[in-house]
Image (cartoon, rainbow, N blue to C red):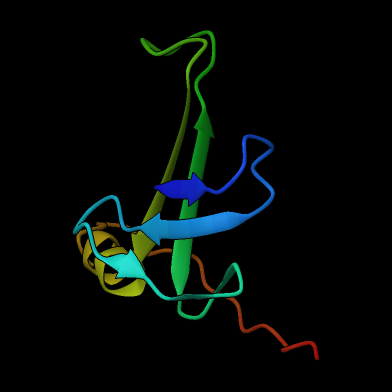
Length: 82
């Protein structure tokens, strides 16, 4: 869950993990730890048609979530850009 200082959603005030409720570390509006930002746009064939959902998970809660998958997530190594 994200909270902003302004209505334009330009200045991030805090991020809270939607699963465990822990506030994630921010410095000058920049997240200083691993975070999963989920977003889904529900479509026509869904019972939630027309809804958009947004949520944030800390790394620990993300790991807990994916550990329960029967089919593991697809993972690729990424070259860090400076």
